[in-house]
Length: 312
Image 1 (cartoon, rainbow, N blue to C red):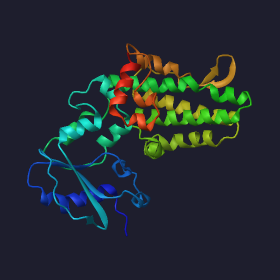
Image 2: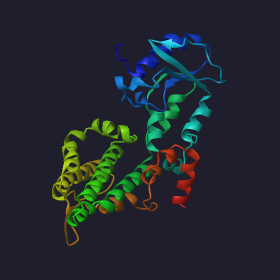
Image 3: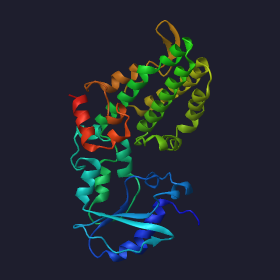
């Protein structure tokens, strides 16, 4: 069977099967969880839980009768009232988001809500998606500052672990820093970072990826801390240059330097944090900058309570 992308499968299912059976104003889309929503699906994606599916939003819930299969795949129509589904997915009304709403919502949720495709829209779904297409300027600056803060907290440990004879620990820290740099680049490019399985795929689509990937993979492949640090230094300086290109702060010197009197080269990430954070709270961050449990991030009420506690 020839592979058809999830978005194309859903679009055809809606156009050929669902739409003719809906005789009232509605919105229809492919949204929510699934690699196909983010555009990362391949033939491998079809080996489990693969359906021709459509989200159908109606003024009143009424499921149309559809065939059980379409193009050889099981079918699924998720019917809901638009406002109910949106609030259940985001945990807030995107028409009037507060700072708390932005910080308490994982980037994966935003990616799922704003990704995919809208096939028909009488009810204003696309308008709601556009309201959360990206962070407001002040929240964006805050999230960027918090991402730099994470880097600043561990950048010296690659060398310190290695110097102490702990190459495994050095490698673990380096991997964490690579992940944080990738997420930082996505945030700089106004892209919601997806969860771990698709982080590399999303990063690879950035204009900066070809120049950064050799340094990041070099840091991961290195077998001693000196080589690890050398590759990270190249990555730090490139990312620092990307920060300056944004024009959100006065230019920051993009060169690395010694970590105090110790023989480790770091970017001193706090130099990027301070100008982004002026007049804003301490750099605790958005929920998935300090919570890493999938179960916790999937609970809208829990993430809101955690953010309330973290930000006082």
